[in-house]
Length: 80
View 1 (cartoon, rainbow, N blue to C red):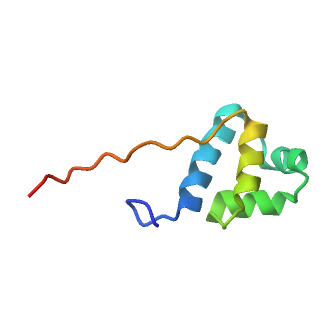
View 2 (cartoon, rainbow, N blue to C red):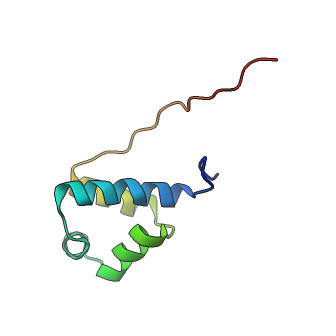
């Protein structure tokens, strides 16, 4: 299911992870090395939101010191 702006869940995750990488001043190549993947793998995920297995997303979050949380979506729909 796509997000509010038509983005895939992978694109939304990639954007959030990019924010963390920027905040922590981590180079994508260093993240790739830590994960044992190619720098292009990380770049493709971050830039294009390529589908990435949940296990790999968890590894990325672990390396960054973050965890994924789910919260209820706020809606503006009213009962008819």
